[in-house]
Image 1 (cartoon, rainbow, N blue to C red):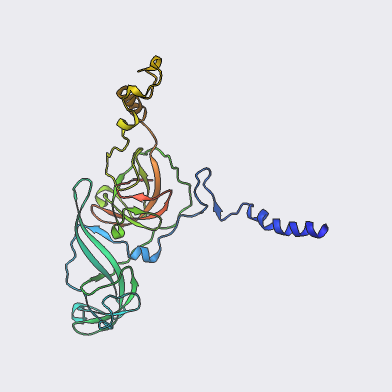
Image 2: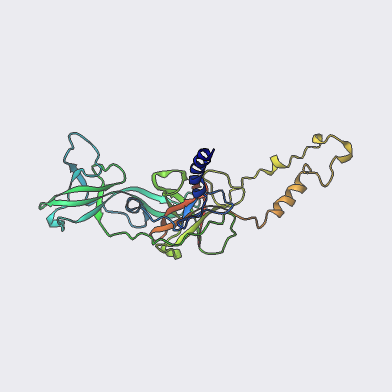
Length: 317
C-alpha cells in the first residue's frame, strides 16, 4: 500500500504543478480565448518585408529582374537563388547593396466607396548585390515572400522599423466605440477574404487622416454583420423572417394578434430595432500599423478572437 500511495503521488505531482500560476503567461478571464503572453507579438522580419502597400505613387518600371543563374532549369526564384538585374555601376549599383523586389498590381479603389486609393504594390522579396558590371549586376535572393519572376521590379531598400512590444492587455470583446480615428479593412495580402493572426490587411485611412507607424487599432464588426466580406451599413438581420406577420401561427383564438406576441409583425420589429440602439460592437481582433501611405495604411494582425473579414472596421486604441 505505501508503494501504491507513492506511485499515485508521483502521477499526480505533474498535474498539480501545471495548475500553479506562472509569471510568463495569463489567461483572458471568461473570454474562452487561449492563454497569451504578457507582451503582444512582434512583427516577424519576413512579414515586415513582405507586407506590401497601397501607394499614390506609381513605380516606374526602370530596373528589374532580367535573368537568373538557373534560368534554363527554373522560371522563378526563391531564397538563395542568384538573379541578374539591368541595374549596373553606371546606375549607381554597388556590391552589398540591398534591394526590394516589388510587383505592382494596378490601381486600387475602395470596394465599398469607389474612392481611388492609389496603386497596390506587392513586395515579393529582398536581394543583395554580390557582383557589379557596368550595365548589369548579380544579386542573391535574401528573402522570398513569393516566387520572384523575370520582369519583377527592384527598388532601393529604405528599411522598415517593427513596432515595439508592449504590455499585454486582454481584448474587450464587447467594447463600445471610443470615437477615435476609424477606418475599414479593404484588402488583404494575397487577396484573401478571411484573415487571422500574422496576416496583413490594408485599411482605407492613411497619413492624410493622421495614421502613424506603430499605432494599434481594434478590429471590430457591427452587430448583425455576418461572417464574410461586407460593406459599411450592410444590414443583415432579416426582420421579415424573424417577425412573420402570419396570424395562422397562433394556436388559440384568445391570443390572436395579442400585443405581447413576437409574431405581431411590423410593430414588434420597430420595437426591436429601436431597442438595438447602443448595442456593443463585436471586437474580432487587433492590428498594428507597419506601413503608412497618403490615403491607406498597412496593418499586421497581432491577435484575433475569430476570423477577420474584408469590410471589418478598425478604430485607434
